[in-house]
Amino acid sequence: MNLIIYFLAFNSFIIDNFSNKELRYDKIIEEEFVYLCNKPGEKCYYTIPCKILRDSCNDVNGKIFKVPLSRAVQMKREKCECQEGIGN
Image (cartoon, rainbow, N blue to C red):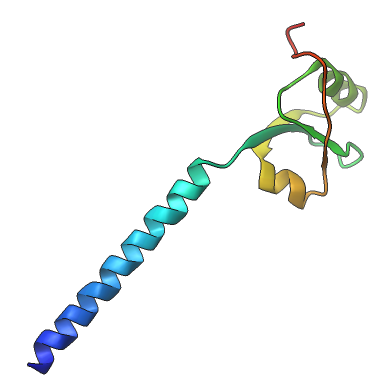
């Protein structure tokens, strides 16, 4: 009888671990991405790549990167708005 109880407890533990990983994976997929310049002096991130970002990043010889919003906040960047996309 004790063997059956241990077996059920072990199976419950395994199932619980797999279900938590699936929930964390779903959270990663839903995360929003933003655009920023890789130079530390640039303090803004944008929801779309725009001319303002491209011009300011080119002025400091930087590169534009697409990163998760949480990473941009961690880098202490602030949200900035732009009027048009890069193609305009």
